[in-house]
Image (tube, rainbow, N blue to C red; front, side, top):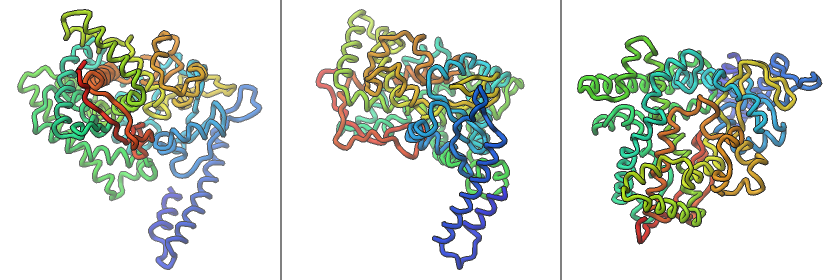
Length: 510
């Protein structure tokens, strides 16, 4: 805390006679000194030794106030994946705040750690500090043990594999209407599509209506008004700094003001939806969820944060899973044609086109699904996985990792640099996922996580992505523009492109 106030004085309250340039230099000097002191203390108090006791684990230097933090892991994760491994090797340690996280990069490390992932404990607030806790610290994805089992029993009901299949007609209708709107009012009329901006809210509204039932215009407008407030809070959380500390809640900051506003609006919206659906006797999942709160099975805060996770947090996650598919397909006309032919073949197998469509979208053994997996392999949603700890000591890369130590997976190293994928591991080749059994690839590839605690909405998300891609390929031909960029949007924590591609109507619709 002393460091915070020292730097506050240098940055804001230092004498006006000091030029901004001099204050900047003094600030950097103090940060260097504070960082060096804390780094030495952390290395001394939190050693991790090799099995033979001859050396300690390679460690990134702590940098005040975030360590490597969410900026290092997510906003700059793709770059740091390569540089950290190059400097420190295959197993090393970073700091998220002052909490250590062990980074693993090889499939044998992943297997040794995640073999009992159902007994793991998720890191408190994902090691991101107080503001993260206020937004998502009690959501399903960041809790463990009995609280997780109780919350999962209530909130997973509409997202099971069996239930997800029943949403295909609803998803299909939403996709068709969305593209009709893009043709009328979007840049699609000019044969252009932005994979993120043009498709971003399609999955969002589908999931919202799965949870809440059919939304009227007023309810949609209310939700739409909440989105930008929530997004700005999450951006602030990723930056870390003062919001990592719980005492920052007492400061008269704009962040705290917006946090209170968001919480109030989000609670009011969900309670209003629940009361409306209950009064109309509509069988919407939100009713059962709130009844679980009233019975004491789960807390209101846990439910509200899990609803946030389903909708706002997964707004970015779903687009990360969808958007890169369009770029990869635009870069490979042969794969596009092969998927079109695959769908035509399935459709001609039966006179019931609706049944053929639903079976094709539900199938996980198609080239379509393989292309989605291949896109997810080459462009992981996040550069590093959610932090979690094993219940017992693990030996990884010659180091003994104590029980309770948080561990993260370097997804770029596992998904791309992994020798398992062969000499063409950096190339988009979806057929590779048809050449291997899923069990064989279990620890070779990260997408939704490992074990039974994978993403709650993964079945619905996969159906959404498949439906959107087949609609696109059945009606349009994708290609790259001269201006198409493969760079990650630097402002998003999940990997998103920020570019347009060509999307031309096919003369004959498949």
